[in-house]
Length: 483
Ligand code: FAD
Ligand code: SF4
Image 1 (spheres, helix red, strand yellow):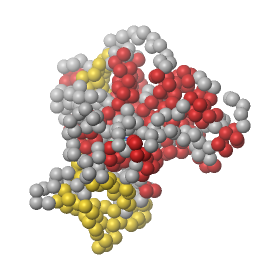
Image 2: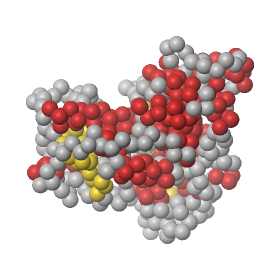
Image 3: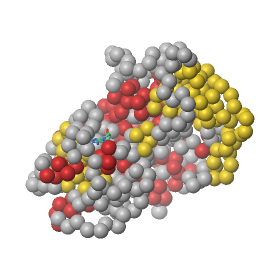
């Protein structure tokens, strides 16, 4: 450990991530956060106290050896730092950018109490980007083919992580993806200004180099069934990582008016179909000069609000039925949204979407709310304030109130038991479903969660698939855990 006055370092405080100017970035899709410089990363790494019992590791869902990689950064050994991170995380350039660090690793950093916590996510991103920029990845050892094959359904973080670990064991791996580009939410949901597409593409290229094949436009359950993957395609095991991409709606009058989008549809049109690029015909309504209202308080709502601003909207408001304290979005996204000029309306809930005779949206009727006792989620429950109703003009609304598990694949295979929430029932420790040879993980098991949890679940399942392929043993009555 470098001997410098840690007290003095910590008096300096946390190194802020350099970010593009709010006015500049609200008009383009360039990445907002610009990354730490080598000097900034070293200074930040030197603030780490190198605790004997590093609580930050417990805060990380995949238990990255955070103290060790930060120590390497403090010594300027970025290759070594990258090797340490890669032992536990396959997607550090992505997780360093999108993990909700404040409730995970940084939330358990001891410096969180007195000073601001170590910028673990920013350092992780710095290491991953530097390793890639200078080609510091370890040289891959030649892999002996195992003669076994695995079908991965869905190319989100769960599927990609599972595919990577299985390919490294020498198994033939083919990823089936319903959309025309791989990456799941990383590609169709999270916008370019938060997670550049070339970072996801580089991860997928790395998998292709490992021999993983990708079959796009393949909807399992429609193009081909799970059973056929075994019987006709000859796969020895199947991993299901189809995510939670079924939008939830408000269930109020006016939801079919022109100008009403689900967040999924809106973000997919912009991200996947290229409306964020200047050289593409925009397959969304022209938002120039429009007033947009987004319903919700999570990351999806923040992405749905910040995107229209970049497409020329005059005013964007986020309407949330609780207060800022209960918002599930990452702190950084809320802060960035505010800096960019997004207006937040708290303690309001839409009760009707208003339209004209031609079927176009013209406004939203809101009910004011107040907070009552905490509900099952631990957050205080919003309660309507009687007769406190008001209207707000709007040209476009985007409904970002959450997603349900993708129902198609489970609906077409009766041997896959579902929970009452529509998620797949699995043994949490192994990812085994109720159908022999079929494993599952990610949002299809947990419901909408996080990238790092999906990635971790994909890796747990890969280890279990590997064991199954070696032993051929399938527990006849797996102990199932409701997600
Ligand atoms: P997904 O990423 O959903 O991937 C599933 C894939 O399966 C998709 O590509 C889908 O097309 C495909 N598929 C579905 N059905 C079939 C089928 N029948 N056959 C073949 N393919 C199929 N998490 C964070 O940690 N930080 C964030 O900042 C963050 N922001 C988010 C922003 C948005 C807009 C959204 C929607 C989510 C966000 N999340 C964030 C959550 C995170 O992205 C998800 O938890 C994660 O992507 C789940 O990974 P997954 O692999 O389980 O599923
Ligand atoms: Fe923190 Fe996420 Fe990195 Fe874990 S993977 S150390 S939670 S940023």
